[in-house]
Length: 166
Image (tube, rainbow, N blue to C red; front, side):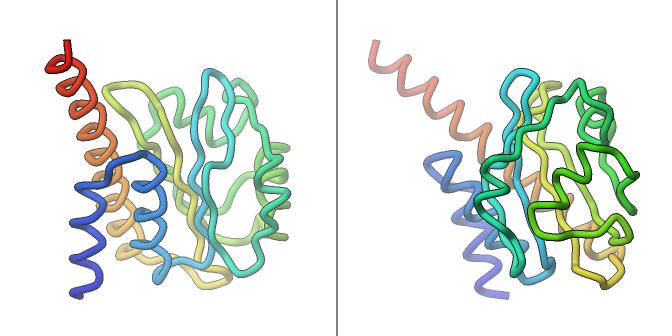
């Protein structure tokens, strides 16, 4: 519990998006087998950071998806609150699962990270072949909220520093 409290405090006060991303995955890695954080740039979705015993880093780093391509990511871009369940058989999902030899028969949860109404990142998690529980959903929601807060804090700090420098 102390380790978790320390990670939460470090996430709240992180100095960079990359530090926040690492801390987010540190916070969740005990509860999930695979974690992938995606960054949104325009219409592209690209892997930012991933964890998991069977993850193939080269495939993850090469993964490029389009938000205009039919997928759960498109649903989140259009305002969906989150996804829970087995991914539908769609090309984008198969490309994602190829990054760790994943399966469409595996339950997962995917949460959007939004700043204001803009989708800036997406967090994917599964617990291998084990079913997900309401506690998994709760921890994902809490962690993505902390991550969002950390990013907003960094933006506001940069703006305040820029204002004081001018």
